[in-house]
Image (cartoon, rainbow over all chains, first blue to last red):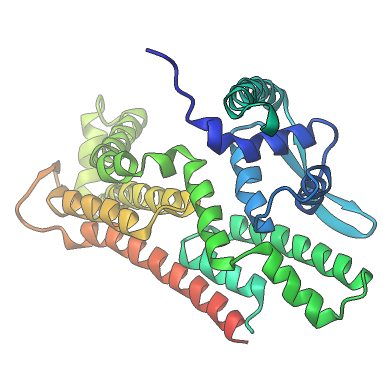
Length: 111
Length: 230
């Protein structure tokens, strides 16, 4: 039986968060801002919904967090763990496979 | 318009979020809100407009609280397997811990030398004061065992954010078990077992622990609601 991938649609926010945190540690607002800037406002979502994803990834030990004070303000910074890097690699290759499939299906005008 | 963070806090408290977690979640969202307001005021918006826009950008606080609690529940083994943890485990945990405490009592009696020194044993049992102390200790162990399991259940339920209904079910299972089992200490007689004579004091321990936890949760919710109203 062919392996199905339930995380295909659900895994996109996870993929984005892991990808952004692979560069440096960030806090929630920073992550949302980076998604907005780098995707050129492609996604519209309630910004608070980033926290369930962050906490889920932290519970899965893909991220670690620490409270840190920067410029007089204390914030929760998240960073990628080694497990997170593995998860990012898995989700990344899955996404490339799916994106290539979608591009083939939709034709050149949508690529 | 009620304060966004107070609404979030209230909903999280209603959903049974433990205090430490609740503080962390609300602090994080409050930081985010502050950042949004700061960015908006820097771009020339008034404080009230920035504050309103920040709430809009964060999304509905009630939906956010539900989502945060779902994530929190799924993050612990107890939260994912609540049916097993709070429906089945108490059936095993109460007799197991009770048996462990009985075993420790016997080990203590052996360590003191009851098993090999008949004269010493008789001297203790014939003395009403020492017998009273021994009986107090035995009943104390019995009640402590029941109390410990009840506290553990309530603590786990609170810590994993499981509905209080499951915690109550687990404590009622414990209460049923403790209602029909007994420990009895009298002169020359130490017995444990099943009985049809209800042991109300023993059964009151898990029920009391569950009631106290529910009251604590209600107090937390009341506190959060007062903040929203203010």
